[in-house]
Amino acid sequence: MTHDALTALSPLDGRYAAKVDILRRHFSEFGLIHNRVRVEIGWLLALADCGEIAECPAFSAPTIAELNRVLAEFSVADAQAIKDIEARTNHDVKAMEYWLKQRLADNNEVMRVSEFIHFGCTSEDINNVSHALMLKDAVGDGYLPMLDQVIARLRELAHQLAELPMLARTHGQPATPTTLGKEMANIAARLMRARARLATIALTAKFNGAVGNYNAHLSAYPALDWEAFNRRFIESLGLEFNAYTIQIEPHDAMAELFDAIARINTILVDADRDIWQYISLGYFKQKLKPGEIGSSTMPHKVNPIDFENSEGNLGLANAVLHHLAEKLPISRLQRDLTDSTVLRNMGVAFGYSLLAYDSTLRGLNKLEANPERLAEDLDAAWEVLAEPVQTVMRRFGVPNPYEQLKDLTRGKGISRDDLRRFITTLPIPEADRTRLLEMTPASYIGMAAELAKRI
Image 1 (cartoon, rainbow, N blue to C red):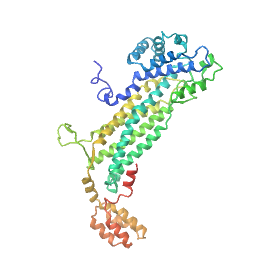
Image 2 (cartoon, helix red, strand yellow):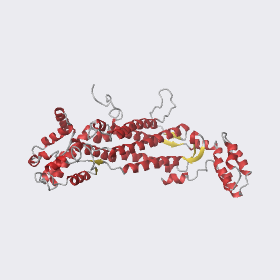
Image 3 (tube, rainbow, N blue to C red):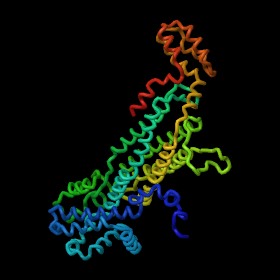
């Protein structure tokens, strides 16, 4: 069968391919190979530039330019050439080393020091740095911009709807009123806090040889401070150096990152479900799209499909993220290969996350508040004012305030007139009585509007 969007095994490469296209440059096989070349060339340049290795002298400006050009112009055809070599070697990193030597065969300066390509390295030195760079770039280039769009839209809704009263529904039952904007602000605040925590996570990398002790490095150049040198190299790539490792970098920082993204996704699952419920209650209407069909048999339907889509994809993303976070920090003794195949699925987790964020954003952009429906629910719930009435009674020492309001309201609706009659009997100052009599469910919103505008 031909391989195209209609025959793709994964919907990320089929139905939804265009929505996650930005991740391809980072998490595809091409992206991994490109980053390996980036690390190998960077390492060779660092060795030549250090001034302490006589056998690997500094390169001329034209050679440095050529090395940089190999990286800048690296193409899918180049990646395929490496894959062709891998078909013979059955080793992906070694294939990339051989390709580099072939690619630079006409450069005499490089050929004189060709054995310093991959000098002192185990494959995992190249791979762990490549994976860290893939994650670092994907978070900054693809993930955070989409998350920030979702947060920005929630903040916009919070400000627009800050003063629109809404009946809260703790345990699904009528409860102390809030505003529709404040509920959007709650989601935005949670996401902003989780995003800030994610931004503090520093991705770590190692570059210390077969089992983490610079054995090969020191056998060739025992006087060179390899730990300091390799630390500078890793930090020059914008990563944090991990000095204590086995053959592999232990992936603890990766696990922390995946857990942080999963936490953000969980917040969005909660948001998707709540907004879905607000649509069901009629608090939100959805803007109509010409030509769109909600049901194949029920013409009236306008379904909240974006939030349902988002929730489903967030579940898939978190299933992969949780496995990555739980599996990757575990390796038998100094090395096993169980992390290798798992790491190839980082793009799957990011892809489903990005797809979900896109769906949530599309859903948020369709929302229109329904003030009439909100007012209708509030006007049918005068019992929620039992809270302020009994609280004022407490202030002025009226006996058994909670119990009196419980008898009056629990499990039954009361009318505006019923509540007013009760208030007029209370032995409280006239100014406070007047304030309670003027209160309505729609006006009893506390600081909700202020909090929503502040986000």
